[in-house]
Image 1 (cartoon, helix red, strand yellow):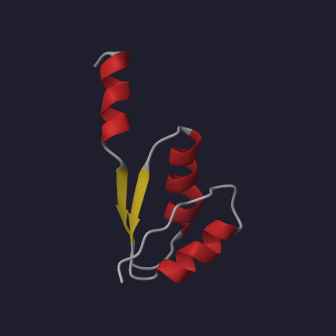
Image 2 (spheres, rainbow, N blue to C red):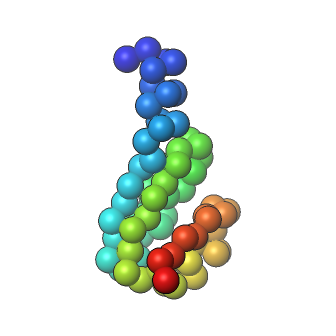
Length: 68
């Protein structure tokens, strides 16, 4: 895969995580790694408040969107 194609692919497709409860592998591993690489991330969870609380202490500034 060429660098241009790889860049186009990562720009168009976010990294998607499905997480029931916060887990260190997600909050301390995958999310910070994706953030450092400039990847877009979608986190799907039914415990959004707990994820928000944990991410508030990190250098990741997420944009939250919830369904009403």
